[in-house]
Image 1 (tube, rainbow, N blue to C red):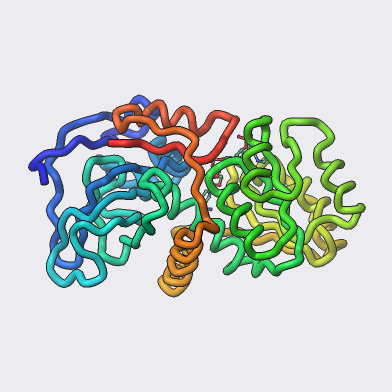
Image 2 (cartoon, rainbow, N blue to C red):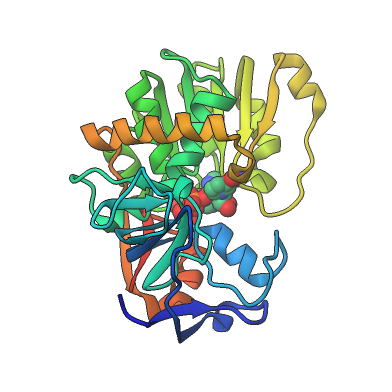
Length: 323
Ligand code: NAP
């Protein structure tokens, strides 16, 4: 282990330019802690909201990132579940994932099956944890139901497509580019619709024979929630996963369909739910049902570019940073 490491540090909230690539002391694991040599760090939209200081701002200075994949470098006393040399992914860290080494609690480190690359492993926790929580624990999706994944080309959307397809749902997904549509279909969507094209909502309703869909996973509620309520089948539900502003809805649409709006944030999942999520994800990653898609690998020093790119339309899987 090196005494110093490269890491991204944010000392002031602001635009992508506040992500500085610096040298800093490599953290040392204390009791119950694990030091991971990071091979790849996942970039999530949430990292950009935190960096700008307008959503759950952390204490400054800090190193961004919750999703790292790599190899255990060292462990503190009382660590029993992992050992140096183990391949792991993190589900949040203590010191930040955008670095050569990340310190985590033992409970935040999970085994990464051999068949999953480190770059894929950096796309596990937030995307797959969120999709799993939405489908299995919040909406109780059932085989045979029809799900519309409204935003199926990004990290969470692709995870949801793979999970819902494996569970036996009829899976419809949206994307805004030909590449995104093709990817969603390749990963398991039975039908795809272009959310950048006028009239696509009518196409979705027509595809359901006018009946609507049972379940909607919504990645951009401030744009879509009002329209979603018109697409729901009787007793359908929509779950809000992403939103970047306010929206007006017509409650009578809900009343007419006996429908429900649910919502989630991943940081609110209980410890029991987390255990269930990681067990489910490990099984799916190990048997190849879950295959994180890496759109772009960038050097850690290019974190600012990654933060610009992730908010640019045209998603096709995960953006990861490689130290
Ligand atoms: P991402 O990889 O950047 O993907 C964004 C997705 O949104 C893409 O599929 C994109 O499609 C789609 N999108 C763009 N415009 C849309 C529209 N008008 N209607 C429907 N979808 C549209 O982001 P992600 O990691 O998948 O996350 C998706 C959202 O969920 C983000 O807002 C994120 O902050 C949020 N999220 C929330 C939680 C939570 O705990 N609640 C956890 C994870 C993520 P195109 O690029 O093809 O247009």
